[in-house]
Length: 308
Image (cartoon, helix red, strand yellow):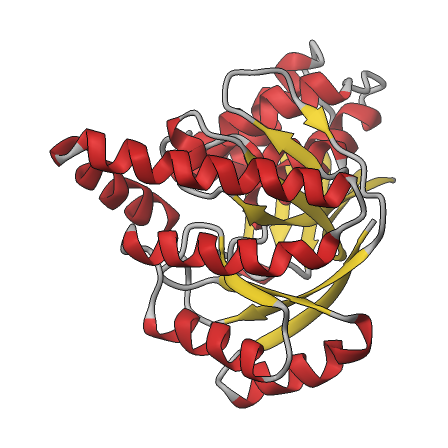
């Protein structure tokens, strides 16, 4: 048997604008993860067992565009395996689906790593990232590439689409509370709606995206200089611009306000919006108080994570 895990991820700054060439910052969330175990199967074929989504099927029975099936087939092809052995692939995850935490990319990365290791052809991070990005296209249509990048490298990432990946250093650790609205985040829909706005008035939205890009640059400087306290105001500004893009929601705005009222230094939605998660910057000693306030305001659950 072989196994592999991959973390979740959260976007700190820059979502949506990243699709239009501006930078974004994202970090791994090690408190949640996707896990894959692969073992020999007594039955012929490759059997996929994913209890979290009530899936139990042989690979050939899955549609050609099924993300798990495509991940397996692409990985075997990349490893040069044309006659794979009979296998059982079990996928489990503590990452909520469609919440902006990178569930799909984490599952893909874990499968790629476990399967390529099993067939004695472990893939490099670069190769894993390329394969995972192809699967992201099935999930999101025109993905930014952030999810697969952060999750593959499991490091904080400064990301500009089409440019080399940059990891960045965190001079002083800081604490984030993640609040889940409990509503699925329809990333493909929200990305499409922002594109419609942009197509109608490109000059206006390019100016908005420029503002987001400036926030991202300021945030990176603050993180690298150890001035994490400055991130709060930047989060508030980024959230206001995301509201302008129409990708927030009543639930997200309610949680953002609740976090601020409980002492958070700043808060914003994270990811595609219209559901999914928000994040709040907190002093470590305030984390539990803010998490409790988010639950009282309707969050399905919360995660407290430290960014190193």
